[in-house]
Image (cartoon, rainbow, N blue to C red; front, side, top):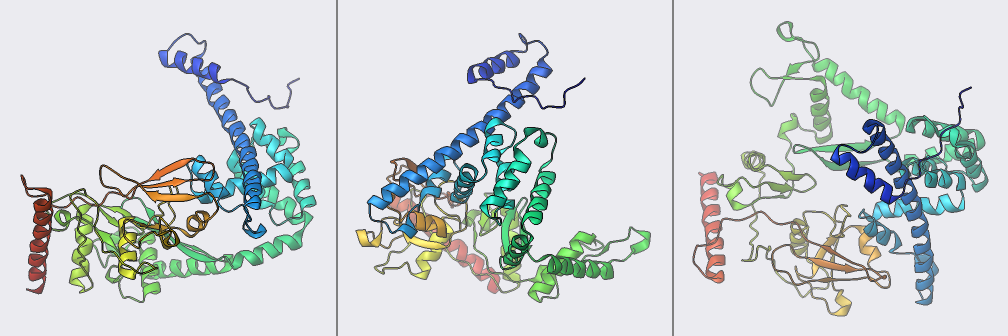
Amino acid sequence: MTSTQPAAPRRIDADTIERWRHELMQGGGVAGPGAALVDLLAALEDLKSAACALQAEAAVELDRAERDRQALAGVPARRRGLGVAAQVGLARRESPHRGAALLGAAKVWIAEMPHTFGALRAGWLTEHRAMLLVQETACLEIEDRREVDALLCADPSGLVGIGTRQLVASARAHAARLDPAAVVRRARRAESERCVTLRPAPDTMTYLTALLPVAQGVAAYAALSRAADAAAVVPDGGPAGSAASDDGPAGARRGRGQIMADTLVELVTGQSSASAVPVTVNLVLSDAALLGAGHESGHLAAGGPVPAQVARELVAAGVDADAAWLRRLYADPGGDLVAMTSRARFHPEGLAEFLRIRDQGVCRTPYCGAPVRHIDHIVPAAAGGPTTAENGEGLCVACNLAKEAPGWSRRPVQRAGPGHPVLTTTPTGHEYLSRAPNPPVPIGPVPGGSERRSAIGVRSAIDVCFAELVADLVA
């Protein structure tokens, strides 16, 4: 009679894994290489889960130690623990947001969901799936959460062959049965979290995402669908769902998805055509790329890298619509962008905008990647830090708050090339270096000249090119 009990996770130490890797890469010495490869994949997955469990325990212990240290330092109780999630994220080479997610889940696993944590440690659950169980039971009281934990994970056989969607559905069903009122309150609270976000997509595209209550989301999609149905025609016996393009080549046809996307832009902006929308963005590109002599990519705020030709087309479209402003940013001989200084306590708007452009709108904390929300001093003004481009940086809200915790410090460091490096030191003494993205390369310096003459030559070349460009536009 065949047993239905799952096989125990494979326990293979690092030496065994390394031996397998060597033998398999050499193409011999292991019977049944296909089976050995599958065993290796499974063993490494078990190892990943076990490592995640150990990281969770380490994160909880770090949180406890930091809270104790901050208590001794006189930090108010409500502020204790500030900066711990950022330390976890830095150690895992992830954003502070991901560090906070692991720390929060780890506390729940250890204190309230021991069966889920045991399944993670034994390799029956991945970190992602274990985190989803925490999220789906967050609205429950501790007793109910522990019951869901036992129902789903006390017996590992119940996890075998279950997909992520099925696992989440089971957690939701148990939560709704145990405390339906809590699930309803959670749904009501979720409505208050509706929002619209923007993030880069491949090929100079972007994702505009709306988080809406289900009825509103369905209604909005239905309206766009009706607009696409009304615009769709069957040209010369062609396929249904196509319509003449307003912004493409003559005779071009738009598909249903394109019509819906264009209609969304037109309805939201109030423009008659999606391609005619004027928009204010920071597009940074070199003078060579702007004037057609270079091919280095530019950088679009909230959009990421932009091919030189696409960048020139964006500028040309803005100029044609009388909606383009050209701002010159000069680089010194070392390749760093140059900006004015100020004696003000806060960064003036011009300098703040320069820092956003220099940092390309991304938080300067290593691995973070969140959009810049605060412009702040690296060395605090209270400690004598000047209000300069060298001592300024763009940070997200969470990272700006984290660096105020006791034991954190940041400082600019000397460098051999461009990049504006900043060294972050955490309370444990670990150091992390971040660099501002390299700016576009300008037209080269005058050959054979000194650094000063080269810098003047570059600046003069830019001035001449811009003067010619403006003259052409006026003409």
